[in-house]
Image 1 (cartoon, rainbow, N blue to C red):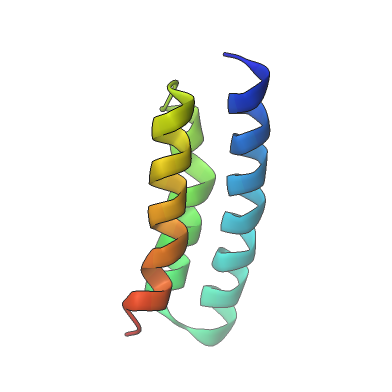
Image 2 (cartoon, rainbow, N blue to C red; image 1 turned 120 degrees about the vertical axis):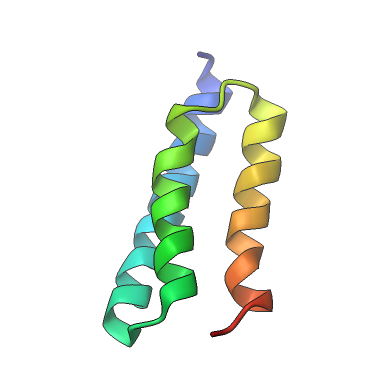
Length: 67
């Protein structure tokens, strides 16, 4: 694991925590699930480019799917 992966993982985990707290307080399922996914997925992805692509997609998902 390199430094870039660690820093991207920290960034996505922090944003995921914000999504999770927002989803829990508003009782919105999409931000809640995306927040959980953002906090967990950096542990399983080793490629930095894939990490950034998946993280960006997970951050954009609540914007497009509002349930």
